[in-house]
Image: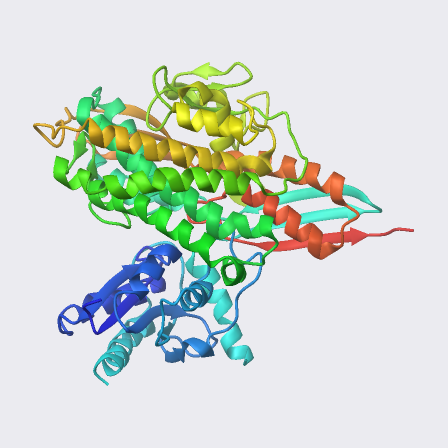
Length: 150
Length: 434
């Protein structure tokens, strides 16, 4: 473990607003020092578990839907995330929150994790985020930097 | 917990691309309707590729699925190579098989350990299972990493490999790079055997169906990239004949096209099909352990697909070791295509079953038309048949146990939510008219 912090952007660039987490990672490449590891993820659980081990401070960035205004940036500690566990959530992928729980159980997140969420609305096929989410990405970059530096 | 935060669930479901649902209707104890609906086929990608250069097909289609990008790349490059009348041989062909080995290991292990095993062990999720069986989860994660490592070295990076092109690769690995994979693969070979013995000890519902199994078949090897399309009921056709023998139908309840064999109906693609049709092409160790744990050379119980995935994982590990051992760096990383107008067909064996691609390209190599038939769409009718059989045997169960069993039945097929659907709204309607 050489990095001080790892920032993991989760998303899909071909699903409109879902690109938000990855856009944050793109922008951070110019903004952070070498001791901050940047990881892109499509949410696949086992690689996320590997990414958790890259640094003691783990920050995840993803598009979320909570019902607030589109583009709103949220901050959740891992213990503030909803419990999504249960059968039927997914036939194929382990959910993100489940993966975080798994990471904790396996001792991969000794210091917990912070999720920066960007409120999103459009998950349709295609490229290009909605305007409020583009603005939300800018705010999320600052939020991540505050976590990393702070 | 506030209701505001709870709604994040919906977001994550949306993020994983697509949605599916199952609907079961039982009237006075009689099954009236069973529907397993997939809502998101890769039609967007088919349309999106029109007008793009042939060379972009592998990378665009790789985006359809985060779990099986290699399958999409392979079916697309083979289809383009067919259109241009070329074939890729020797070490380049072996490297493609090696890349596919990595994907099978990753995908099968993810499904077996994190998604399917909890069903059998009575846990609601991998997290619940991990609390009691940390060792098992850690074994699975380490095995999967052995597959990830192959995809990273050959594919160029871990997710959405970018190194595959029509004619070969952008860059080929050195012998040294491949040899770094060997120690972990040797460990994985033993771990896969332990895994097969472990999962074969699960309790399996006693369900068998007279499936029509369909897979590629090659005279010399267990199929990844090449072969004829065969079935256990007499089908034996060239890949280019797919549309003559199979039919994609629109079904009202689902955006996905359901595939059927013309004038015959449902068929089954995936591990059970490959295994039944290619048992003699497995490595001796894979064959031996399959028989040791009680599989026959043909397995008709879909719940035992978890064991067959283990056997295929062992095969993929041994095949990877063989390819690495015999590898010599090829003089050139790719064969240059001679571009001309044409129609190309490609089929390869994605972890969850045969994936068919067809392209029409013009004289400049631009894509005029694309057709992609993912394995989950092909299995959809068979999954519904399985659900009906399971229901008939288990109607007396309360809704929650029945739901569990039906979901487990669907998971037998490792349905691809990334390329076909996400899960799962389940609706059991019991009507009593008396």
